Image 1 (cartoon, one colour):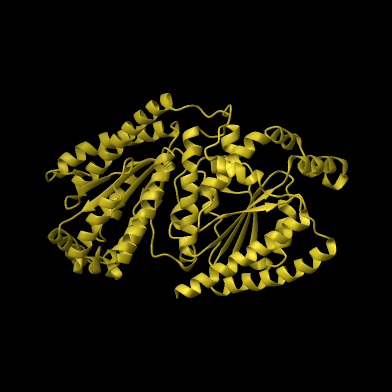
Image 2 (cartoon, one colour; image 1 turned 180 degrees about the vertical axis):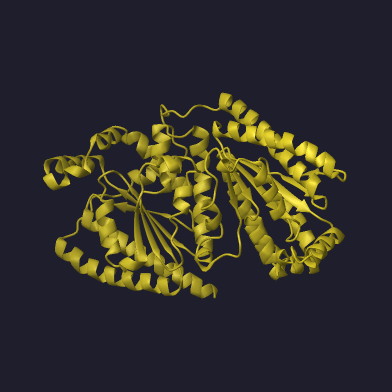
Length: 501
């Protein structure tokens, strides 16, 4: 953890240095527009240490067209109704821009600690989520610069007293500033723990003394310039070492047991229309009750549907959602990422769609595209899809830790059944829109996809979010299995929560 110290700086020296720094910062922004990354400058520290003043000074030196400033007041009801990191995923700078964070995930953690002393285990859990979030950003080549503005107790007290005494600045001193001063010693110890636990490669802390505002401003500007130069050099070196994104040939399995599980799945189920209708109505009624109970308990539900082309995902989703109040449910079809979405981490577009407490989201395809089509087609590098298994598990763990109920389906059909359905679509006028050249091209890569699916099942089936393999050669059997599985998983999750309480 680097500590940036400067002697007291005169106004004359400061005024002489600022124009040079401003020119360098604007040149940085010009270079950043042509660089394949973004910058997050996170300014943290106790309330009343001048974080806002610092951000305002930096913003005034930079070209505003390439700067996005973020601040986080207390979480709203809308934000509390989703996982802790949801509000932060939604506010990230665009590619080629600098994000200035006067408030951040650290502000929220420290604010909560100031109001009620947290158990160490709870704080450690929050810091683990933050480490994970920042690691995802760093792995996505984002430059993360973390500044902790430090003032000793006497300097902190003096600043609050000075601001309070001047009618022009008294309004800036909040009750939270005063509270932080009263419990300064405890928060200072917590601050040291936060920095220690979240100091990691690519997201290290720089402690900057805040008593001298001029020296502070220059120190942070210099850290931004130094960080940009070293990051750009690092990425240039990495680009030479990384294997380019390309279709793997041949595709090798990471975990053969997943593929064996797929191949062992019996697909020859029979179910008459009459039996299906009777059982369907029973399970639709029970599912409706389970979803309403989850709504009453403020538990969100996330359904994930993956499967082969023509496996029947659309029909299964229609049956499932017929048991749910349309006002409380959204079906989210997932296709290729848009140009905007490509400017962010691949999980960004899914975090934005996470339902609030009590509501239901049904993902027709999902974040698993990273380890399926993107892996197989070479849309991402090998190092990216290999680490994605851990990233996806962590993502779903965040959802379930918050209380969301995650139910994942893989709809499995045989090659022969897929071919029959493809031909039926081509021959039936009202189904022809469901088939295209890409479907046939994907079918030709069946063996590769089967390996990728097997690895996905083996590596991302967790106790909190297991995979449910649905034999789907018989559509009626598949739809009934999905209704039953959805219902039983929701009921089980609600029982487990009640038992804990």
